[in-house]
Image (cartoon, rainbow, N blue to C red; front, top):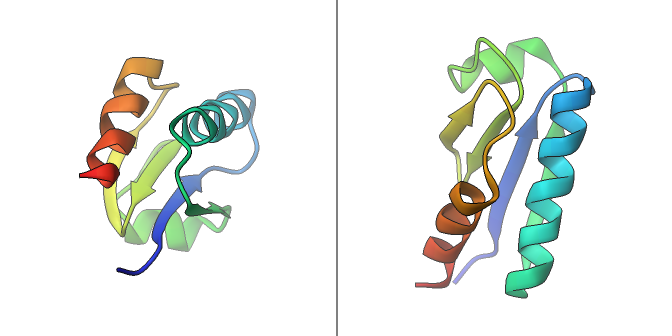
Length: 83
């Protein structure tokens, strides 16, 4: 099975930074072997349908956009990668 990819969409605002930290924290807690990328180009973000940031894309599917997600939400998305 190929490695899962998580993309954090955002230019680097406070919410984007906190979202990335939260994702990295949950990835570490769950012991996942995933690739995390930052996407900062507006054209790439809009290609996923994200008109506001931060956004989270897991395996090329937009799962969150706008505002910082809750930790339980992130845990739910990432636990699904273990299935």
